[in-house]
Image (tube, rainbow, N blue to C red; front, side, top):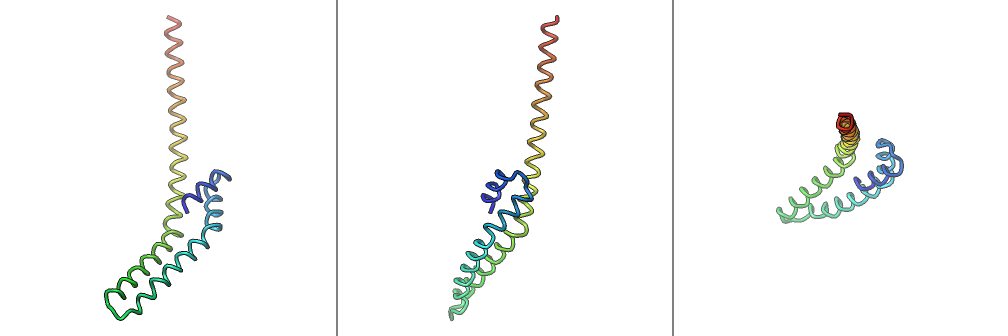
Length: 113
């Protein structure tokens, strides 16, 4: 999901739009893959052996929570992370500009004196 997000972000430039495109394009594949895993491990819950049945139940719950997290929490984290990255890049550029200005003023003082 994250790789697709960054791929789309490189194309469109807007984080919200990139997130929507990535979710639409890869979301159904993630859900289909996750549900296949859920049903596969869900079959283990029918086992007469308690440890195998419990393993199936725990795995099914883990995959379901992972799917839910991918489309809720992870989406918000990706968006906030991208906004933070943009703020940091802008701050770095401002710092570079300030250093250049200081260096230019120092050179002028050195040349003038």
